[in-house]
Image (cartoon, rainbow, N blue to C red; front, side, top):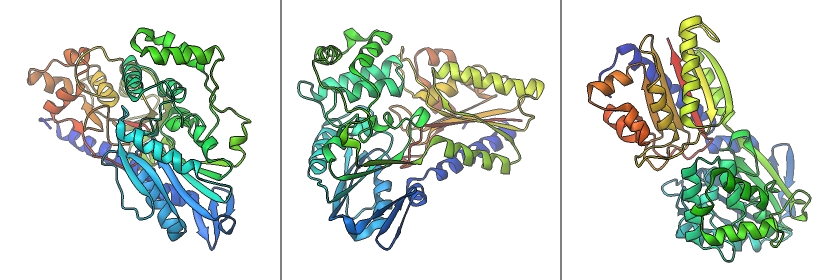
Length: 447
């Protein structure tokens, strides 16, 4: 970190501690233990009780960045009652487990390891019968980690589609709508494969609004999206010519009624399926709010539902910070503004970065050099875009420090090259894999 005023250094330390307090609140092991407990042979999940004597087998399946730690928690809860299972995680997102196999795969672009693991997982699901209890662990990243292309669509087609959707600025809801309609496992189709077994899904949410059919592309719940929705998304972003021909042919055929839709509400596949939300972005924000208060900041949670272009969202946050300094509204300084959700970035340059780093870079360009403002924007999963950083810091000295080093902040924005600028400044925020994932946390401290 290049030289900055001592007050900003202290505020940066506060911001990191506030962020880590939010992380602790959504640690997957603790989240599952809060939702579940075992008394004898009676398993409580939420408010529902399962008599384990009614089942001949217990199988643990799942996919997502938090999957290994979630599996570890279920093993700690059920021990040798578990007969086996398979959970697919992002590379290096591991934990010690005994009964459940862990397979690593590519994210955010799917790879061959993911395709092979998805095939094995679907085989295990299809082997479940009425005497089987299937516990399915769902967390962010599951969509990319379970690539099961339908007939006529290749893994390469799905990879190209994913890259195009990530680059055009589509939301996760939109990206996953297409993923579900190119998959043999997403959009409720895992539930169809498991039926007539009893299926209990434990979900750690990484999507705005905690929509269960969007988290990991909703393998265990009815799908509200359609082929027609997919075509509207393609038209909205004008990406028809950028998607593989086979993908467009499938979407058109589905919209014309020539292909079966994903399972919808009322499908018998969901008669024995129960879903429980064990952790969400707001839980992290609430813990961050409490930690900020302990440092003496008057704190406000804006929302856990913020979406939009990272630059636009950054401008809104900076405007609030400046209002606090100028008028004392909506809070008196020292103040902490907290928000969650997940922004998007429309990629136009050839640089390196992620949505949190882009947010911080755009904010740095707008921060008033008067007053003391520090912001930290970071992904709770520890990875921001295709980088090794969770996000970045920016403060009211960032622009001056960049200029002193001959760095062109606005050129970096134009090239979507936030990573290299923040690396030069020493302002990248790196946590390594956190083994959880509830979208992003944004922390603004104003003094």
